[in-house]
Length: 200
Image (cartoon, rainbow, N blue to C red; front, side, top):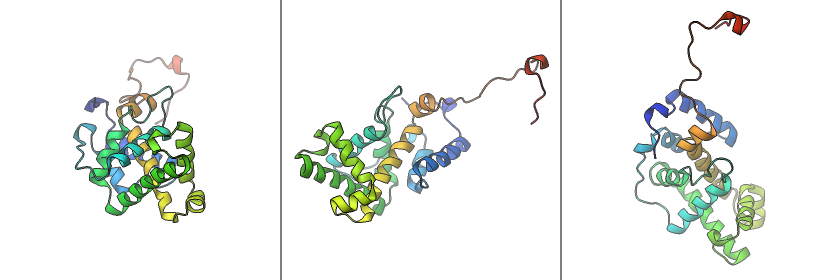
């Protein structure tokens, strides 16, 4: 259920959060992902799918591997799957989408090659093993014989997952503990309780 406007961070909060997430990701948030995150959840309407059913299933599974459930819900429970559907169908440029889809196809191929199963049917440890290989550009190039550009697929998956999660209601209210108005104003608070005056 979408958060109501009173509980949703304003534009300045969103910009600050995007800057913080860029530091976490180690790269600037791509323009498409940034613009998608700034659209209120209730207004995110996915267009026609630009990936196959298998590619979508792999991407969604990777999101839960990147941000699994702990004391807060995992990526899919937080709505990251819907965010991925929206961004890929509306905001990603053709070249960005092509990198992502090729990477998802490679995960499928490697699942078949190394374990004789589709990626989504692998055990979690096997899925993590393949995703870890993709994460490392050197490992991907040497082990899978891919060009360095293919390693951007993991960066895209991570970006979609992290941004989608922290701009979801779960990410806003539970993970980050968003407070629309921190504290409260008390014009009669006793100086003796503070011990000193505060400067602005």
